[in-house]
Length: 242
Image (cartoon, rainbow, N blue to C red; front, side, top):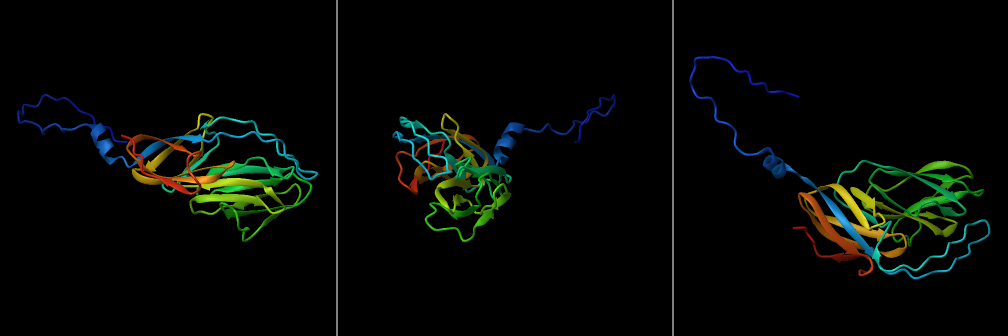
């Protein structure tokens, strides 16, 4: 860091000094800023009540689902194609024929450390959403074993599946920036490139993806998306903040 120090002296030279600089530092910063932030408000449809669902012996049953009105959606996955977030490490435990988490928001070059806590071997693989085709390869974890499961580097939505239990799935969103919505349905993404970016929204309990072309401005851009109003793989018009 360079410090500029002005020293007063009593010289007899009366020639005028150089003119003072004009403009402000804030205007310079604003004109050169290349990233902005997005605050996305995610809403979902009404949830119908579901009874408990029994699974085979040795597996944990599906718990009952309570009815809920339409509104802010928690645990929605939001990811963008732009951005440059660092890789993340995630952990997952398979127990009772089901994963400890059902969704992750990750970035390129990330990986998930999977631990098999069941007394039987676990075979897992990764496939592009909606997962209608089987993975090209499977990773086998003996009982009690742990291993890292690699993920694709390309932005998109993927599914981590259990070869022997088709209900045991983990939704994984990969993007240059990504996050899960909080209880109020809000997601905040930082350091997004200024200009239009492709924003994608999904949820582990909803068989749909919403794609939005969103313009990012300097500072904070606010927008909203409703997973209850869009069909699978739908898109919306740009919604730039003023």
